[in-house]
Amino acid sequence: MTGVNLNGRKFVMVSSTASAVDPDSPTEFLYQEADGVVWGSYSGDTVTHGRFVGMRDGAQVAISYAHALKAGGKAGGQSSSRIEEGDDGRLRLVEEFSFDGDDTVHVSVCREVG
Picture 1: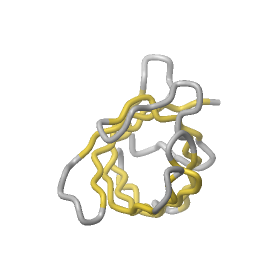
Picture 2 (picture 1 turned 45 degrees about the vertical axis):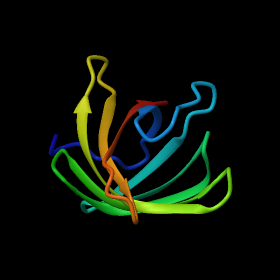
Picture 3 (picture 1 turned 180 degrees about the horizontal axis):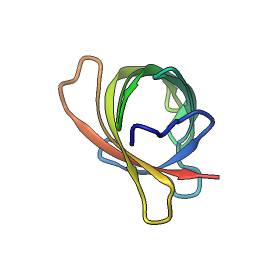
Picture 4 (picture 1 turned 90 degrees about the horizontal axis):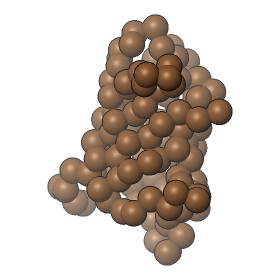
């Protein structure tokens, strides 16, 4: 996975241990990457506006994130994702993440679209 570049790739969340995923309007993530630095934005079922920034090293992506919640309030934290290639050639991100102030580790899976 060292040759993979996330620049311009779009992903949708398909599962999360932190919340139910609305299959009709899942959270969508748009990634940018240059020289191993990754950043992007996201919004969807539980989030009105989110941003992330971090680093990629091979198949591992480590980011910090912050977002505004549709239910009100905000959240932030850190995550570590593993990039996997699916049978169809599209990428999948398997992410372990935690929210600031909470030691619970959650897991989400996102798949590449478009």
